[in-house]
Image (cartoon, rainbow, N blue to C red; front, side):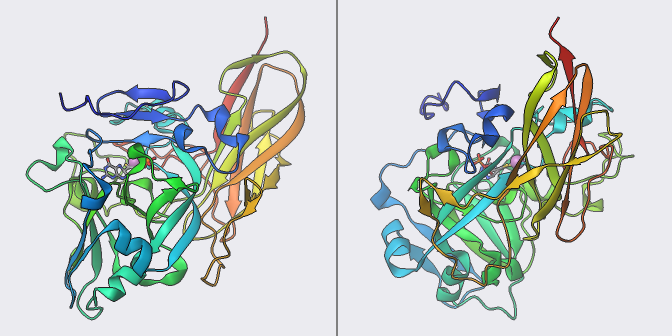
Length: 381
Ligand code: MTE
Ligand code: MO
């Protein structure tokens, strides 16, 4: 059986699909710590988790439009390159898809708002590896990543594929890394052991797990998840008239905000409550404001933002970059007196004044839903 070597998993995850394993964090667990514990972090797999015989045997190939193709062991990466640490949120483009499907059915895993998570990633800068390989910056325009897993969607291709622009990869302030640690621990199998890409500020689909190959190319990847999925299609397209080439692959995250505690449809007696959630954005911008309404979007109050920097009382290592960009989420909280039934709404604004739409913009794949987050709370009896 292809799925009999899967890792063990926490029962607290909300499982949407066992094979391949797809599970989100129960949203009310998310704001409990600034970094989501590894075993509670959402998992988005498209195939069985690849099994590595031994760490010593692992090799990463770096090739394509480069002067010096490389074959690197994990030891090479750890000893020949400077270690880099970045705190970055990962969010699946399908986060909050279920809410969008209330407008009209969409195609994809029915996620709530639990497919986002903040973590500390350590490894080496992709930039350093590409420079070591002598990438031809006058010719190559994209960097393609290949994972060791084989999703059925990839058909006759080699593995899970995605690419990012070479500019993003080479810019040290973008902090794209090849990570072998997550929150200070060895990368867990579900999250890409032994090596994954982390592309800060991009949708999760570009952060390729179980990375085995990097290819510098002229064109962006023709992988399934670049060309026929993770696209924000026009709202008039459905399966009968879909034209995948009409729309580019999604890269940057947009402003997002979610109420995590209380959970939707919770029954509460009247009283003071602390509402909690997360907010995030793309392009290295940071969240400057979260507004919350407890009377169905009539009046708004400012939530307190929590920008944690410490993990287990240890400062995360100072960035070697200019550090002007922010790839983490923020947590937020607001104490209010609630009298159910009522509708709670939350919305965020980032440092480039990006805002969220009031309603989801429906699209076939149900991606990039960043509309105002609304949940209902009901009286206890
Ligand atoms: N990489 C590989 N090799 N295979 C995958 O199925 N899924 C992608 C991305 N990288 C995927 C992958 C998607 S769609 C997301 S949202 C993130 O991994 C999820 O990362 P996580 O499972 O560590 O949370
Ligand atoms: Mo995803």
